Length: 497
Figure 1 (tube, rainbow, N blue to C red):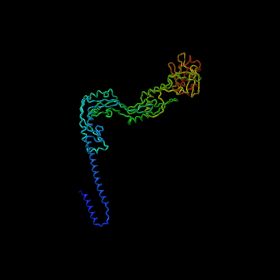
Figure 2: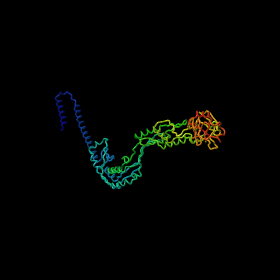
Figure 3: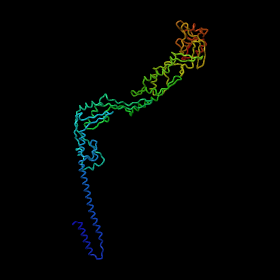
Figure 4: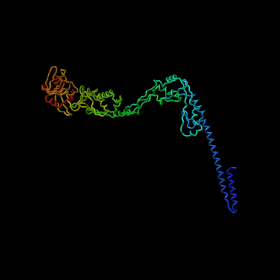
């Protein structure tokens, strides 16, 4: 009999004895004893259930432990592949298949890729660290420790052999490995487009470091990798200067300074502007500086000379009497000194500052307007009518009959456009057969000039034809004095018939 039953029996006997000893009219509550019995029975049931549940849990744990002894735990990766819950045998089959069907795919730039097969290089593969050795690192009875999200990575190690000479020859035969098919990378640079500084990005090219390629591929083969990327492995030559470099940013900033330059040219009353829309193409970068191409600057100056030079051009001139004549000034007018202006303009541009500029001239005229280069102050010599007019600021100051070169003796005064060389008072005129003193000497065409001729009593008419000068323009003393007083070096002299 159990201890609990004995206790119950003893309790009941004691109660009976107590009841017998009491008087017959005493009441006893038996429900107290019934509640005690119920609690004891409940404890028995709880104990039985607990033992049963514990047994089931232990049995499940045991079953899972046995199952995980033949399967990989959660979050297990081999060679980058998820093998969680896979059997050791299935993983073995996968590794065996991988080794049996192994090839190495080599990827490069511009679709330059090729595949190396084991037979190409006499390659053999033997797994050293395989699925069994990896599984041994995992305790199946501790499977519950792997239920977190921490990834466990393992690598299969292999023993690899291959013919390096055959690999070298195989690589040598690939199109992308031949230098004739490779393109060198190009550095980023700054250029001018539509008068603005723009950055032209670097180009990658396809030039391979063949020695490095071989090392990368050898490593991939020894690790039995399925693919390798020559670009990611830095096998290509790269540009030294990239678009996002400080050097390019500084270069662009310096160029923008030059492109902002404006050269405001002027010749008397004619002006124009030289800006980046014209000189943008002249700029080039060399030895850390922006420079202007000398040939381009010179070509521009030569173009200016073609447009603005007036020496040798024919002008239409309206005389004081109102008629129009055409005269060519082979010695008068404006002529740009191309060499000097090329040098000066390059220096001006190189300063990087906007400036006002007048071209360098080897010869200048009296004025420069859109219509002519004579202006409003000049001397007219009408060779047909033998008359001289002095115009200053558009107004007639004086006019006079004259005597010009003797036509009969071949000394006729040549027509054309000239300018006063200088003036001198008094002066001595000398020739092969003469020496003459004059009071006012105003040469304009080498030895030909305006001067007084006190030895003459008459001027004008047709005297010049048979009794003219050696080519000079003879004037009465008083008229010569007025002209001398108002004339200046550089004043145009127009001789016409």
